[in-house]
Image (tube, rainbow, N blue to C red):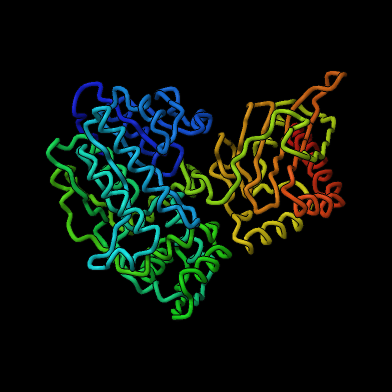
Length: 501
């Protein structure tokens, strides 16, 4: 990426949403461009395993908490607002509005010199009341920040194409898995996709804009395509046979989001705002951003090239962040209670332990490699059925897979789990994000028994919610010996086999 000139030596940027898809990629770009970076995170532990962690300052805080923002804004020149609510709750728009107003007020009070916000590209001539709720909220957040009194850059992008982006994953899996597609009418909508590399280039370059510039910019690539053309071009780029695409008018955004949720790794809760934004044409009305962040040769990146770059990253397993890096709407986020006799109520536990005739390192390698294509080492049909059942009720299912085939970090999505804790070489704790009448965790650990042998320990925990939670636990308890017992046995055997190779 072309490195812009920072506004002044040692300029400091505050990045919100640093654990998300865009934020996790923006931080190293800012660092490489000469900026000092401070990251604001509700859970700083989520950032500790990123390769750039030791180069940034991390502070605990929330964009809705004015007190935490006051501390975070001290000494900051440029503030990046990269947080979005993807919730389907009735009050998410008011939450977004309140967060933006709090952020804007505290930025102004702290003397921040510029706010940079990445929002959505709104269709021209369409009243706000006709926009999808999420696109309408993005536009409102942009206006709140522009009205803050702080010079603000609002970048408005449509479909972002890059390895791991939700839009790319949706396009990829729909095209690869369905040679014949009965599709909703929005596949005929014209959009202007943009490569994630160009988004990052514009974000970094926006930090150095003159102080008298405070406005929104449309950002997009050089190609304007229908979604149908995008699928056709993807098939050609990926070397697939020509796809037969049959649009039908009966698939509403709600229905098509469930269809996408069943076919792709993107759950219906996230697919719906993406598909709703495609009801109207989203094409850039201007390219004024080039006055302040000049386009070099081959920039913006053409659509076909952005697909090639994304596919190469996927095939080389070099996806640095994914759409699943951000929290899933509606997924539980409660940490594991530290008190075994938790005052919050019952905490059911299934414990397994096995000696392993292998080194602790060999056992840990198997543990850290669970999920994704490696599976869960027991009764694959049971895991598949549980994943499908979760998708049918709007959950994430098993299709999120892994960001990296070999190494995990705190905050990674792992099928229908999320990595809550890693003590590398010793402990992996996963928090369930499937739809459950309660909260669940799965721990896998490497230990030594009283004879000094390597030992595998496994613990599944469930905190039920109400009578439904109690009924759920006791209904699945008879299968634990097969599922969890088989998992412990097969993980141990795999470690022993790998040790002998």
